[in-house]
Length: 65
Image 1 (spheres, rainbow, N blue to C red):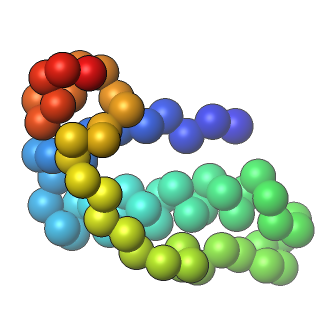
Image 2: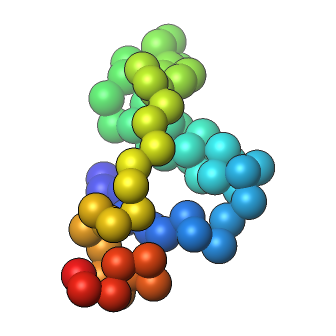
């Protein structure tokens, strides 16, 4: 199972949080015990990265990428 990277430039804070919950659910399905015995409920840290370092192309915040 692969989580496709996506830009969050046009997302609201609530939408970003919802997307991250979906990612945690996918990781839980992939890496935790069956039947929801253990679920991932949060990331270890919340980090905001500089948009200039965005590896996705095309990126409206990093036209040189």
